[in-house]
Amino acid sequence: MSEEVFFNELFDQWAEDYDEAVAGGNEEYREVFEGYPRILQAVADSLALPKGSVVMEFGVGTGNLTSLLLKSGYRVIGIEPSAAMREKAKAKLPDLKLYDGHFMHVPDGLPSVDAIVSTFAFHHLKDEMKDRALQDLARRLNPGGKIVFADTVFRDEQTKLAMQQEAEERGYHELASDLKREFYTTVGRLEQAFQQAGFTVRFKQLNRFVWLIVAEQNQKN
Ligand SMILES: C[S@@+](CC[C@H](N)C(=O)[O-])C[C@H]1O[C@@H](n2cnc3c(N)ncnc32)[C@H](O)[C@@H]1O
Image 1: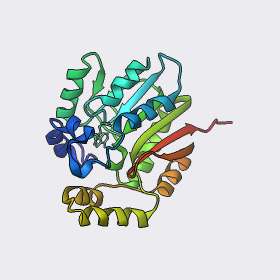
Image 2: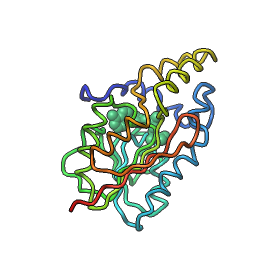
Image 3: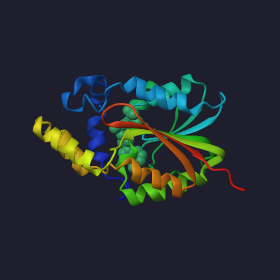
Image 4: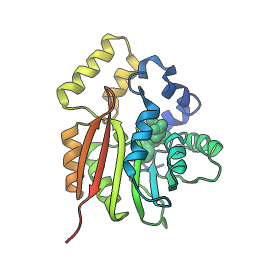
């Protein structure tokens, strides 16, 4: 795996317990995953595309958002860098088209798509990588395409520091070091990245950590 994927080993290890954590089984991450089914549903609903539309999903994990997308009648192309996560997703969804890849490396030969989605994954890219990824993803969309993400984002740097401190004070050491180690960004920084890649973007907070991000590609004249 390329040097642009930072946490692959961690996700290979987490694959076994991941569905338990998103259901509230890991106390430190309970607030991060609070309302997990509602968050995934908000992403699927925000697409509002005709049945049969082609959706590319990054960071498929164990396939939970993927299941909703398939139920909504979309054709899904899944991209996931962790082999253990791919195995979990394949066990749930044997017919899924699932590829080894990541935001900075999409396998060759895939078609352009009507929308791109991802949940709890975009923060694995450093901010300048997010910029480059969005420029690339924009080129993979059919005209009028959308990107819909849900991810941990902070209102501003001050809020991010306060949430890190709160995790430490609660004794949530795993969460506190995650909040420092991974590349969680701010609403303003993400808004700038989407705008520079040619999107009009809106944000809605879904729990204390997670925001829904709906970006529509600007029409070219
Ligand atoms: C927290 S899990 C989220 C899984 C699933 N999307 C969900 O909502 O439950 C993050 C997933 O993103 C994947 N991931 C990590 N870095 C990535 C990258 N650079 N590009 C795409 N996926 C990545 C991980 O392997 C993992 O499966």
